[in-house]
Image 1 (tube, rainbow, N blue to C red):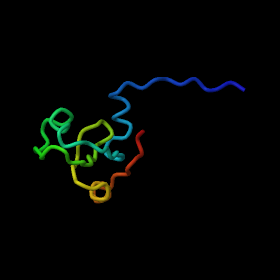
Image 2 (image 1 turned 135 degrees about the horizontal axis):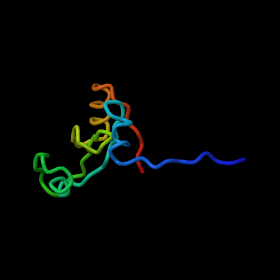
Image 3 (image 1 turned 30 degrees about the horizontal axis):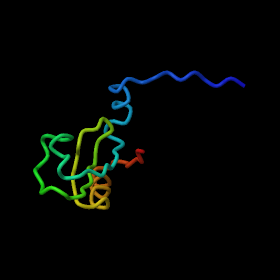
Amino acid sequence: MRRPRRLPLSPKAFAILGENRFAYVREVRSEDLPFLYPQAPRFVPGLSLFALCAADGTPIAIADSRAAVVADAESHQLETMSVH
């Protein structure tokens, strides 16, 4: 049996696919925030934080617990996806 051919999606097309429906949670170090998300507020170095990101990688929220950003996603009716 032949497998169906997969067509690659561009980053823009991939982002549009989950726009306004899906988000992912990413653990980040406070000292990495200025490089990853220049618009984020500054935190003291050494903190472990969690970022809720839209499907295209745009940060939506930053908190000190995974539960807090997942709750924020739910309040915006976003489904969180696991990203490895």
